[in-house]
Picture 1 (cartoon, rainbow, N blue to C red):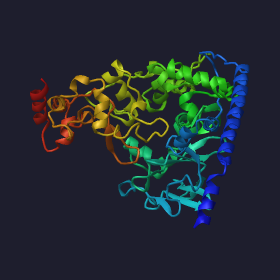
Picture 2 (spheres, rainbow, N blue to C red):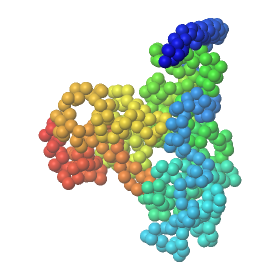
Picture 3 (cartoon, rainbow, N blue to C red):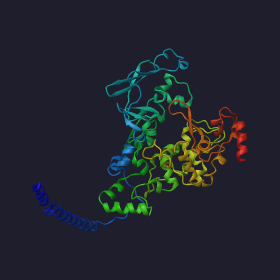
Picture 4 (cartoon, helix red, strand yellow):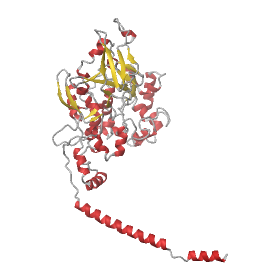
Length: 499
């Protein structure tokens, strides 16, 4: 027992060598860090901050260069519909049935001998995909190899490459919702398809996809050469799909400015966060004027323009051009008047004079008082880097979140929900969306007609116009929910509550 106590005392009497060693080492570390800090400071003062010009013209560098720094945003964008809008055909991009696919004219359209046969057969040979169309004269199936596919979430369009360089749009598209092929252009135009008509659709000017449609489905489309009949096309683009520079403008100066001088990064970050200065050599939409900012979306989502203006929209780029490149499309936002009852496909107008077609979605937004009087922007609700996602949970549906967005401006109504809407809070009819963003935009992209929400956020229920024009000419928000009631019933309640 005594021996154990002696050992214990000896153990306690040992000098705390480990503690002393650790303490000494930590001071050496501090000294090392101090030296390194002094070296960094000295180096920092040897690198000067470079001011940048507010007007500039840069070159396109491609989205991969952006991902080197903006890795988190790039990762979100990379899997978005925008990023994957246009892709080379392959097993990972083709969604239509090419294993045993075919399409036959509807029974009511089978009027000629042979019409009961498939008008098209879809074939897969390894990683090659082919749409073979039956020739209207010979009856032979003519194969067209798929070079590119456009879209995948609603429908998919197929392009074949011709000898003259044209990427020709084939007449049948795949409806994801229906799980079947359909002749989209016949559906859009409400015309009867035929074998001859399918071939004729490949002769129109706008069937030359890379001379017409590619401006919205690629980034920085350049048309080096073409002929009047759109049978020759020398085109190229920087990125497949809608990439970073489609919305932020050409980035070569931006990359060079930050890549070689880290002091530029620090100072520019402070200036941007504290002084709200524009980011160097790149267009950051929230810091653009309203017209310039919304042009980035209007370029493709606001096609209510004349053919003569399509080239203006094609060469548009976001930014602050010194040379006079087109950075603002807002003068064209309302190029065409809203003609009551217009029936042109995708840009239809209701009989009451309000936007109806899917191509009028952006037009419905700029017709609103919210656009005219406030600073409402598309990315308030839509995540710009993951374009099918919400900017915040609940913002894209009738919810407390979307209500709060509206009530940030309409503060006087925050505690008067029931009085203002005539419905109890948190019930259908009490949300701003229910009355002010009813489903009045006709969406036909999948081959199934449906209606999505108008973006005329200042829209008010007008059952009196339904009485005047009929439900086919002017539907109203009240009867969208109360389908079992008449427009006269709805008009009486509107008068009771708000007049």
